[in-house]
Length: 391
Image (cartoon, rainbow, N blue to C red):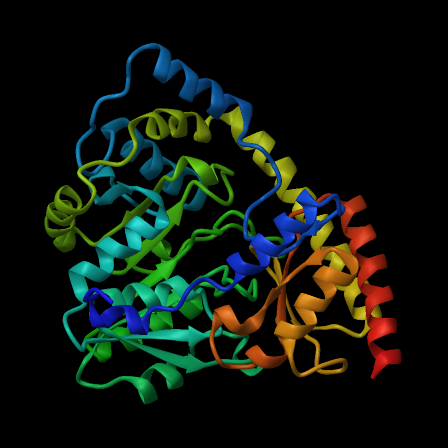
């Protein structure tokens, strides 16, 4: 075999893509597959955003922008924080990136050296720990459960920090659990990070998709933390591959230097399209869709509980339910595979998200209309009855 970098041994594949591949193969064979596995809304990009993207192409707006993005888009993002979320953000602190993954890559490249440590939750979004490994840092995956609402606490940060810890990375709303940290909690965690001489990074890519509390942002807690966001989830522009970060002023120049070298510039057409994301007519569409997601969550949480599948966390945001299936099995991977092939319902086993509870946990994305969720519940219920009878 040709030589490859040792870091690859520390980076695992995204296992849900195997489930997706099997589900697509089943659909190609004629099966009616219900997709509850992939973290992508079923809604199309809002029409005003599509129209703005088409207009950009038609008028020749296809050349490179600056490394930090279109000035008018940076200002629009800053205005969104000020007007909608009450956070005093200036445009010069906003850097537009190729997706939220690009934003995280920039921040971690700024902070993480070889063998430096970053604290993360387990379970948590797998690519976060893999990005740390890509930079030859050490992800410290901290087991969390319902007692801490699947989030890190001051005590957990203190007990897992070392002289090599440079950052703590949180997500609110979180994937796979849907849990949310309030601003007071983030203030406390920011203080703990300061005391331990590390940076706090807050992944807010599901910001806006919250259901039981007002929209908030960690940026109202402090201007000295890093926030990552995206046009993918709330704004429903997944394939446009556009995100952003908000950084403390001291970090902007170095982040721009990294962006120039790593990405050159974010995608131009997507940036012009995203300018329409903040228009009142677009926001009205997005609010209707947020309400639809809330209705789906309410239905599915109740219906799954009736089947004996326990929701492990308070799903206050995003569009996921993190389920405990120990009543039926301790092998979530086998359970998900059998559910897919027996009933054509695709769900994600817990393995992707870490070690804590992964053997008995599955994630369900409520990214299908209510009628499809009702059909999914019928099929899951039938599968559980057969599963129990076979056992």
